[in-house]
Length: 454
Ligand code: IFM
Image 1 (cartoon, rainbow, N blue to C red):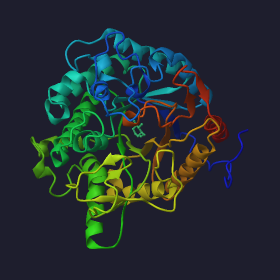
Image 2: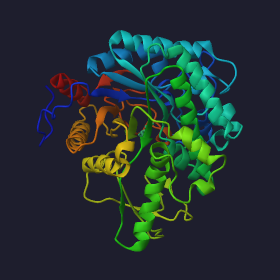
Image 3: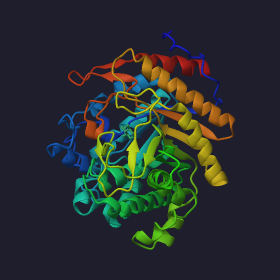
Image 4: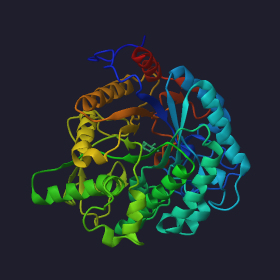
């Protein structure tokens, strides 16, 4: 058995028998085969090709080569013993231009993957959009255009028609907050736009796309639908009115701008007036009941009023002076290789806070991502991270939050967007020269914990 992390109260507390254990990945970060079998380019291919956009100058054209090596990856999932695997479907692999002609070879790939998962006894949980907008749509305005939401619904119908007989759970979108903030407001992610507050339509159009996709999936009889939103507690840097105001504003951007319309059918005060389209009508679609609500949790954020003496960047992302807040370093916590603070208690706080805020409007929760970047194959820090967060999750469940599943980000090291290959989030190490997979200590730890749970 793996060496236990110091202070660990092995084994983990017992989770309910039907609790869904899984791991997550996304298409662009692992598939590679960027120009194979008719796949069309995406916004991230174009972004990575622009000099200076990705820290190590890399792109995801090979990534982990999962497109060819998926049988080996499915075998790893089986060995790990997870119930479910969350992956994403690349829209431009299925519809190379984002709309119109379907690429049969692209759909065939997901068909083979789903078959292999079912055969291995691992439930497929596809995410229908994880940031990789087909380039043709991006060039036509992308998520700034309402039309993109309707094209998304058509694409969802194509995927659901092909995979729906074997897929029991769908995730519409991954982290619309990041695509809005990092991709369109601050320009650190594809498509690299720095629109600041003019990025707001991107949030609304993604939420509309979610609502339309829910309609399509329900129409096809899909029982279980969720979304994966990133959320985290926000702490005010001080008790001053200015710092509390800035923290509220950040909380609105990351949490309420997405959770309120989905769960309450309203936007936070003052937002709806800034959005295009028949917003009230759209909100009815956006707030259709979900079977479960996915939360991606990584870290809390300490925020104060804009302060020019503080670094003008947050995790390497430049925050322009027009943004009415500054991010402070959260002292007193271990940090991951990505310099993110490790705060399991904030996961407890987030979940209990969500329950208090949304009450019965909050469907059962699934943690659709949680994980950390660390170097090395003997990754005791990752074990400690996961151990701590699972205990916090279990405490939240004891406090009455209905949590039905937990997915580790990520199955294997992959292409971490603007960070390139530098940040390693995997339970499985990938040698990016040889593409060899090596399970890390955390993989064996999780496998043993899952066996103990059963
Ligand atoms: O790698 C990403 C993933 O694509 C979305 N959620 C956060 C992860 C770590 O940054």
